Amino acid sequence: MSVIRSAYIGQTITFNCKYDHKFKTHTKVFYRVNVDPVHVLNSSQSSQSSEEKFILTDRQKDHFTVTIRDISAEDGGVYLCGVERDGSDKPPSETSITHITFIKEIELNVYSQITSVQVQAYISKSVFITCKFPQEFKENKKFIQKDSSQKIPVDEQKRWIRHDKVHIYDDTSKGLLKVFISDLTAADEATYRCGVNTAADDDPFLEVKLKINPVPPVIRREGDSAEIRCPYDGNHTKEIKLLCKGKCFTQDARNIIQSDEDHVKNPKISVKDDTELNLFTVNMTDLRAKDAGKYWCAVKDVFNLPFELMIIMKDAVTHEASVGGSASISCKHIRNHSQRFFCRGDQPNICIRDGVSVSSNNSPNGRFSLTEETFTVKISDLRAEDSGKYWCGEESSGSFIFTEVQLHVTRAPAPEELSAGPCNEPALLLLLRSRTALQTDPHLISFTLC
View 1 (cartoon, one colour):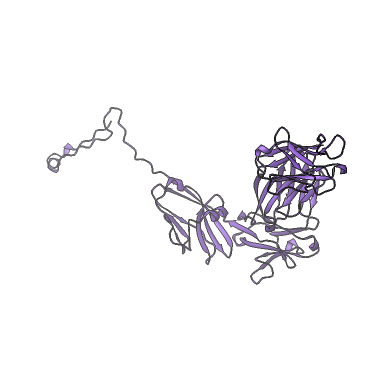
View 2 (cartoon, one colour):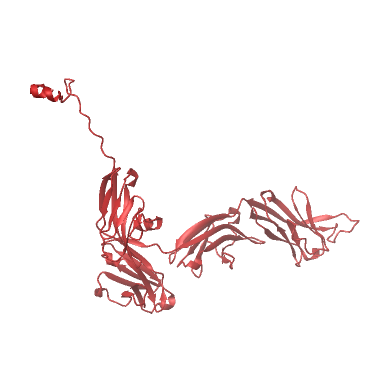
C-alpha cells in the first residue's frame, strides 16, 4: 500500500500502518528509504519515549502508529512500515535469519509552512473564502474547522453542502474548497482552517484569519435613495417588523415604518417582507439632511445591529487660494447644537477615521482653526499639497451631515517682464534729472516710443 502525505515545517503528523493479525506479536520497524537509522519497536514494547522525533506505538489489534514530531524540510522523502519475521510468518529467533515484510509506503512532502491569509468582512454581511488545496488531494474529502472546534466535513464533491449558515463546495476541477458564511456576527471572527482527510489523519493546508468589522456607514447625497436590509430568524416570518430611527422601543426612538404599513402613508418610504429569504427591506427615497442618523430593525424584542446613514449636502463648496496665503471657508450648518469639524479625505467616513484636522471641541491645530459661531474654517500659510477634498461635518447623537469642500491652491504668477520694442529701444524710457534741472528745463523729461 502506498500513500502520499503532506506536512508543514514545525508540524507533527501521525499515520497508521495496518498489519495482519498474525503479526501482532512481531517487532515493528519504520525507516526512511536510503537513510539511516531504522526505527524499531520491539515486541516487548507498546510505545517509545514521547521525547523522540519518531515515535512508534502498537496498542491496537491491527495497526501500529507512527508519529513524526517537529517536521523539518529534511524530513521529506519515502518511508516504509514493516514487521520482522523469519522465513515463515513467525517472529524471528536469535538463530534465524530476520526478514522484513513491508506493509506500507509513505511519500512525505514537506512544505515551508501552512499558508495563512487574512480576510475582512462586515457584521450582518456575508463572506466568500476560497482555499486552494494540493493536487494530490484532489479526490480526498475536505473539511473546515473554526479555531479548535469540531470540524465541518464536506462529504460530497461538486455540490454545495450546508451546515447552518456555512456553505461549502469542493471544486475538484479547480483544486478549490469554497466556503460561504452568511449573516456574520462578532462571534464569527476566528481562525478557520481548510483541511483534507487522509488515510491516517487530517491535514490543514490553509489558515484563514477572519476579521469582522462593524457595518460600514451608508453615505448618500441629498435627493438620493438608500436601501436598508434587515435579515431575521425564520421563526419570525409572521411577526410585524419595524424600522426605527434610534433603538426601537426606547424613549428617544422614532418609528419610521413597519412591515404591515401601506406605501401610500409615506410615499418616500416603501417596504418589502420576503418571508422566503427571511428579509425585511426598506427603501428610502429623496433623502434630506434630517434623515441622517442610526436606524434599527426589530422583530418583537430581537434587534439587528444599527444601520448608520450619513448625508452629504447637495451643494458643494469650491475655494481657490494661492501658496503662502490663507483660505477662509464658510461651511453651511443645519443644526444649532452640534459638534462641528473639518477634515480631509476622499470619503467623509474615511476622514473621520484618519483624523479630524480641527473641530469645535479643540483649539486651533497648527495652520487650521475653526470659528464655531459661524462655522468658518481658516487655513493659513497655504501649500500646494493642501489642494484636495475636505469635509465640513456636523455630528449630533451619532448623526452625521457633511458638506463637500474642494480646495485649489495655486502658485502666484511671476511678475511679467517688459519686452523690448522692434527698434531695440526700451518700450518706455523715462529720464529724470535733479529737481533743479527739472525746474530750469522741464523739457528734459522725454519719452521714446517705438
